[in-house]
Length: 66
Image (cartoon, rainbow, N blue to C red):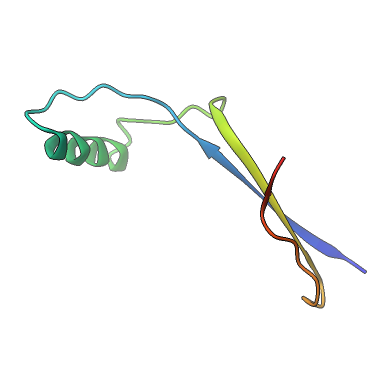
């Protein structure tokens, strides 16, 4: 039987934002991310998860970290 596996990586990075308050800082960060000013580097993987499913979809695993 064939199985499909899905692998998910979580990437993170830290960026500095000048703002008057926390709300403004998060809004600016979202805008900078959406405008591709803040770009996450692929090398900063903080978690990797996997799930497997049988082709008939009768078997599947929970997502697990590896």
